[in-house]
Image (tube, rainbow, N blue to C red; front, side, top):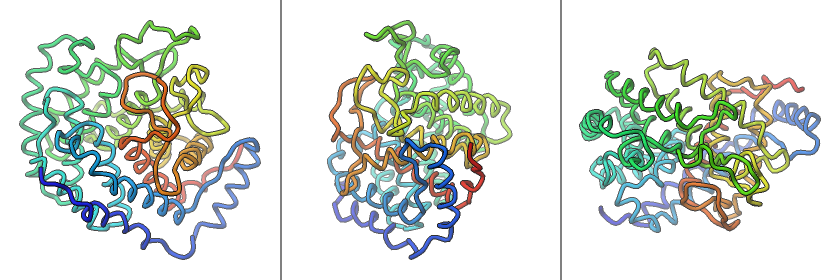
Length: 399
C-alpha cells in the first residue's frame, strides 16, 4: 500500500467547518423540547444540540483522527476490523458535507487495498472492510469494485458450513457477538446492490445460528461468546459486554437499513432490534448517559465506556429516524447518550474513555482512545443530524 500522506489525511477534515450557517432554523423548537426534557429529567444532563454544534463536533473528531491516521498504517495495510467503523464514519462525513475530500480518502484506502478482504477471508473480522467498498459503490455507482467480495463470499458459503458453530472455530463461523457487525451488514448490502438474495439468505441462517446460541431471552442482550453463557463475574452477575453488544446493535441497524427491503426476514431483524432497544435503556446511567462495560453491573468496573455507548446512541437515533422506535419513549435516552459522548470528546477532538481491543469488560484509562470508537461516534453524529434536520424531535411531548 502506498504511504498515506498527512496532507491527504488532513485536507478532508476541514470541510465541515465551512458548511454551517450562522443560525439554526429549528432553534425555537429545540428550546421548547429542551424545556420539556429538563422538566421531565431534572437530575440528568440532557439537551438537544443544534445542527451547528453537531457539525462542528463531527468535524473536530474527524479531523483529529485523520491527523493521527498514520498511526494505523499497519492496520490499514492488513485491512483490519478496527478500521471498519471509521470507514463508515468517513462515509457519514461525506454524506453530511458532500465534500469530495472524504470520498477521495475512502477511494485511496480502498484502491490501495485492491478491494480485497482481510488476510483471513473466512474470518468475520476480515470481511468488515467490505462495508467500505459497498459505501464507495453506492457513492460512485461503480459495482465493479465489488467483484472480489462477491467471489470471496460465494466461496465462503461453501466453506463455512463445514465447521461446527463453536468459538474455537471462530475463524470459520460467526461465533462471537461482535461478528454480527463485522460481516452481516456487508452480506445484506451485497444482496441489495447485486440483486442476488443468495448472500442475504446465507447471512440470515448464520445470524440466526449466532442469536440462537448467544442471545439471552431473559436480558435481551448477547453474551460475547459461548464461554460467557454460564459465567458469572465476581459480583455473581452475568457478563454482557458493552462494546460487544454495541457492535451487535449497530450491526442490526445496518442490516435492516441495507438489506433487500422485501426480504422475508425483515421482521425478524426488526423484532431483535426492538428487543435490544427496550433492554438497553433500562441499564443506561441516568446521570452521565453512558453504559457500563458490563451493561448490567456498573460496580464491576468503575469507568463507563464510550465505544459501546456510541453504537447504542447511533442505533437509538437510527431507530427513531426510521420509525422503529417511539420518539416519546426513546428520545431522552438517546439525547443523554449523545450528551455523555460529547462530554468525553476533548477540545482537540479526541474521543476518550474507549476500552482498548479486547473481548470482555476490563480496566482502561480515561484518556484511552481507539479508531473504532471514533467511527461509532461519527456514525451516531450523522443519525443525530438527520434526527434534528428532519424535525423528528418535535414528536416529543413529554412524560
